[in-house]
Length: 355
Ligand code: NAI
Ligand code: MG
Figure 1 (spheres, helix red, strand yellow):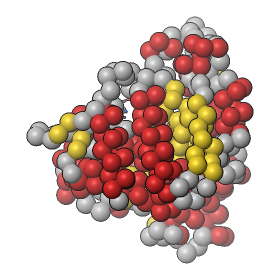
Figure 2 (cartoon, rainbow, N blue to C red; figure 1 turned 30 degrees about the vertical axis):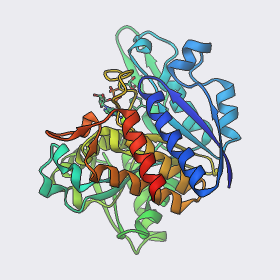
Figure 3 (tube, helix red, strand yellow; figure 1 turned 90 degrees about the horizontal axis):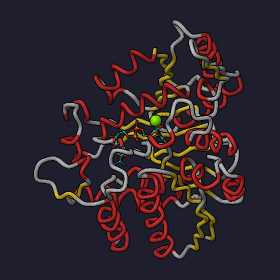
């Protein structure tokens, strides 16, 4: 098939991991006889430096005409002055809104060989296989903001239809997995969460009464994720809670650098990115873990291009390389062979070519 993919490297380790994802997509195209074209565009701090706008119009135009978008990460200390009026993260929020990708799917799978890289006891990690469905275009990240010298505010708003559509995505996923859905909110304190729980309950009662649904408060969810992670299957939650809980969940997998995400919505064009940020502490050193981005490229193949066999091949190649004992520094424990971002990517590409 022919596909146009917009690549948004961004800042920090973003360009390093986005290049890895693109390399793997190119290897897939060669192996399976597809023709992928790439349009590389600016976003975040790189775009602020170039034209003063974290989401240039050319970037939006390119994404709109693409079949899918692969993104690295944005942000960094250079653009983090508290008084700055333009910020890299505005570009990220804006492209999510522009593309209408309201559902951010974050699968959390544990490779048994990485149990030693996790701070959690390995017996707790057995049978962990969950997917967190994070609402991505509403809530407090998108509400009106104010700040003066003495006070500040961030408004959290959710509309009924925004809750319904994200819960529907999660419920359909749950139906195709174990039938178990956990909705996470803070309904004991927040009005948006009380609406969330009410809408979720009604939707489940009318459309998904076959599912086994549990409502959980976010603070308890943070604890149970670590204490009994294998009890979770599909988790659905609002924007900020999903952001925080998945960084926490990444510790089950061994590193933030392992986890991918797929952001999908009404259109076929999805946005695919690792769940981590720009990691300024390791940027430019060539040591970032590319697996989260490469696994995001697999999700791109699956969800936007409907190339399931190709997606499976990428995921299998990552698993095999890890099984062979190859590691980036973040997932290495004593005695492991530590590879650079490029060498790890090459190993995954070589594995793909062999299959
Ligand atoms: P971060 O996710 O960039 O890094 C947290 C820690 O995880 C760091 O120690 C980093 O070295 C490590 N890490 C992250 N990805 C890694 C990888 N692939 N391989 C190895 N280690 C990895 O979060 P942080 O440091 O809080 O934020 C840095 C910047 O990134 C901020 O400007 C923040 O706003 C931005 N950010 C951007 C996101 C995005 O573009 N989607 C998401 C989260 C944060
Ligand atoms: Mg995050």
